[in-house]
Length: 342
Image 1 (cartoon, rainbow, N blue to C red):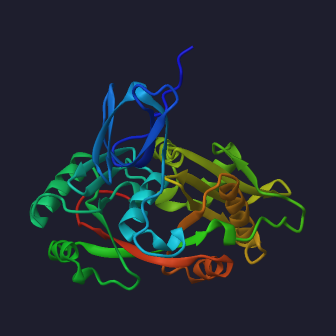
Image 2: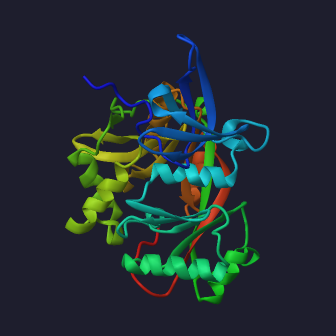
């Protein structure tokens, strides 16, 4: 039987710890902690604090992804940088196709949601801003996507204060969907409390027909999966290293649902919805408690979620149970092509 590859699931750009045997030492091992910069059939290269280490794959005994290095003191969910958290969130809602332009991440999800179909500027693109935007517009156009960029910054940041924002605004890009990114320590969140009916949240590794139908029914409009877009939606929703689909069913009807994705040492909450006639009855809190329980069971210390600035009741709920705003982002959309808007 072939032994499993300890490097499975890792790829360049991830921060990881790679444990390898020490040559000539029967029992000795040593760790390399840092960013994976290259992988091939024979070696893996890790950029550590002492430079790039090129490690023979045959010597690797264990490897796992680890959270980014904190940039300031405090709890991990507060100490992470905006750039690192944005990169973490990509793996919670992964695109079907991605490409790098220097430090920019280009994403395509066949038009399913802005999160999976926008350019995420995480560093220097290696070109002038004008040339880089031109490149992204061509890349999107080749895939039939609307030109879309996701700009992030501290709470209350102004698009026109950002050089890329000014470049996009000069091209008639319009900002929309201002969104708060909120984080919390998993241990600080309340556990699941059962529904008054006694029902508990069901957690499944794949979307059941009941979960899928309830999600599709509530999404409506552009998000309602067609036969073509449904495949893209399912690929995005199941594309994280691990995810769970939560549903609360009472009297044969799904009254609440959510998804939690586990990646890069974090748990991300997505697609939380409560049926209109079940709101203000503790369903959202029960769902969040079940997801927090799942994160704690896996030893995951930090959680994040994204909520539109216009969703004041949702933000208030999240603050009540222990989340706080880390930063915010918004999309800037071009005037040509088709594409997602959330």
